[in-house]
Structures are given as structure tokens and as C-alpha cells.
Image 1: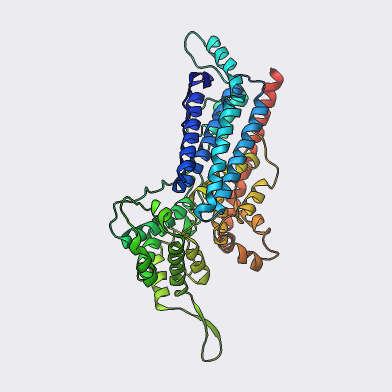
Image 2 (image 1 turned 45 degrees about the vertical axis):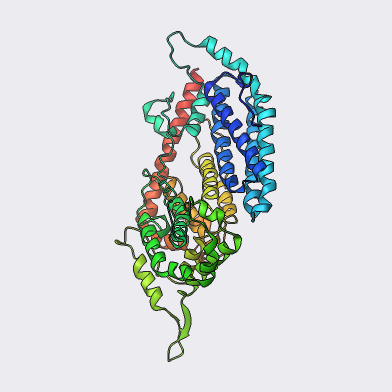
Length: 488
């Protein structure tokens, strides 16, 4: 039977109680999924739990700080442990492969949510009841909102990045605590109402590829770089790539005799471009992926020789057509090298019929963004990360995703974060090789970008001026805070 919310479970803070009711709903949904072995909803449940852990724990920590809760540090450690537990379960679920192997991980998710409710919400969080009563009694008669202590203001910058925050700083320093203005393109919604397998399959392939391309299109309007973005970061390139796939790749997939035979039992009714992958039998997913890879292999450049014995790469007519289809409308739109086998390997990696990378990419990015702020651009009251934490985290991320994507994660940091300069990129490449030739094997597009930077010395000079100006502002802010502290 589903668990029903009771007033005795409330802590007395409306937003926290609403979150706890949400946890209860997730627990009931996971219980139902386990009972019915509804593995098709497993991935969505894990995503919702990850979102709950991020938003609720941060909201609760701000509440505890602003209320002067003496057990804040211990409670915060519990939250971190719970978040890591959820991440470990999510990784196990993703690596389990086939549906039957994922059921134990769904059971573990249900058991974890049950413990979160019984041990944490009904145990640890009940200590907050005294705080809610105290806050109500101390509320100003005028109804004015309470003033949060200084450490809470800095944490609100992290937690409420879309909210307006009042800083207790002079106007000339307030911008140093402003949250990043990150532009993350919206993911297109799933398409539905298909009657033919071929149409649904084509749209589902496009949709899954788009989930990777949209991730790499993120940017920061406050950060302006002189050079064109790499092609994978461009919405224009994404549109051209989809057109190229439709013309050169999809016909080879949809004409496959094996796929035609196996798809006869697939009922498209009620399916959309997301649920399509959940209902396909593993063998059909494998065949679609095999045809995808074979179609790209047919575009590869082949080694050959001229009459005088000189080695050359022979380019097929279809590959020339691919180059023409992906050419930018303007050189400033995006940077695309002359397409060869390295690019074909990258294009091949953009489709995975088993793993939807969207959730993992975004969770990885959340960590990267947090570490960047803590190491490179820390807020005044924020914990500071050790030197090299961002570098190490990016290197670790390379082991999580297809190896061809590493470049674009690093270059995304350069486009998003004001203090990730080309000098940071230069130093980062030194971790993957002893010389430029070795580094290019692992980070070809970052090395290509740096060569373009070296061709424009004014770019590095401007970066150095910006860094000096930031350091000067931070020094002024430190002196102001030091003087204010001495005066108090």
C-alpha cells in the first residue's frame, strides 16, 4: 500500500514539507515500479531522485543556516553522504545493461528512499520543528523578511542562481558575487504520433543525437571569445549534421533487411522518440547501432598511393558530399577542420542505442561548475577547492564518456567560465602528452584551438589584462572586508 502523508511528518516550514511530500511520492512510485517490475520508468525515477537531492538538500541547508541551527555541519555531511549514495546507485543502474539486471538496482532505489523517509525526514529533520516555531515567534510585526547572516547570503548565490539576492556590499563590489549567467539551450520535447516504424526510428535517432549536441551548445553571454566556437558547440552545425545524417546515413539503416524483419513486431502506437528505445529488444538496438557504424565506416578515407609512390588519402564522393553539407555558412559561425577519419569517429560516437547520455553529461557538468567556482572564482564565504581540482575532475570525466568528447568538455569550460583562459587550456593539455604531437592524439580540437590562439597574440594579451583586473578587484574587496571586520 502507498504511504500517506500525515501532519505528524511536517516540520512546519512550507517549502521543506512540500519537498518531503515529493520524496514520499517518489518512494510510492518506486514501490509500484518494483512491484510491477516496470523497468521502463527506472531511468526517469533515478533522474527525479537526483534532482530532488540537489534542490531539497540545498534548500534545507539555507534554512538551517538562516535559523542558527547548531547541528548544521553534521546535517550537511548527512546530505552529502545521501547524495553520493544516490549517485552510486544511478551508476550501477546505468552499467547493468539489460532490463533484468537493472531490477536489483531499482529495488535498492526503493529501499534507499524508504530509509531517507524513515531515518532522515522522520528522524533527523524533526529537529527542525523547534526552529520553525522560533522563526514564527521572532517574525517582525511588519511582515518584513528576516535578514540572513552573511554566510547565508553567499550560499544563496549557489542555491538560488535564478533568484534575486541582496548583498551586504557596496555597489562597486556586488558584481563579484553575482551568479553566472549561463545559456543552456532547451532540450526539444519528444515527438509522438507515429504510425510507421521507419518514421519513428528516424526521429528517435535524431532526438537521441540532439540530446548530446544540445549539451555541448551551452554558453555564457558574459564571456566573449575572439575565435569561432568548435563545431560541436554550434546550433547551426547541429542542423547541418542532422541533414547530413538523413541524406547519407539513415537510408543504410532503414534499408537493412534484418532491421525490417525484426521491426515487424514493433507497435508504434503510443510510443514517442524517448520511449522508442525502451521498448526495443536488445538485439534490434544492436542491429541499428551496427548499421549506424557501418554507414559511417563507408565514408572513411582510404590509404592509397600516387603514381610516384607518395602516400595519399583517397576521398570518396559521399565523403566530399558530407564535407559540403557540414560547411559553415560563415567562417565565424563555427570552426570545423577538413573532415577526415578522426571526425568520422566523432560523428559515429554521437549515437548510442543503449545509453542516453543526457543525464550523465549534465550531472558531470554540475560538478564541474561547482568546482570551478570553488577553485577559480570563489565567493567570499564559499569553501575553496584545492588547486588542480578542476583539472583532475575534467580528466576523470574523460573516463566516463566516449573519448572523442573530452575536447569539447574542456572547450565548453573555456566558453562558459570567464577565468578559464587559453593559458589554462595550454596547461591542461600538458597532462595528456609530453609534446604537442602526443597531446594532439588525445585532445586534437583543443590543440587546434590553441594553434589559432597563438596566431593571434592579442588574444592572450587581452586575457592577461582581464585576469589582472579581476585580481585587482578581488584585492580591493579583501581590503574592504578586512577594514569592515576591524571596524566591527
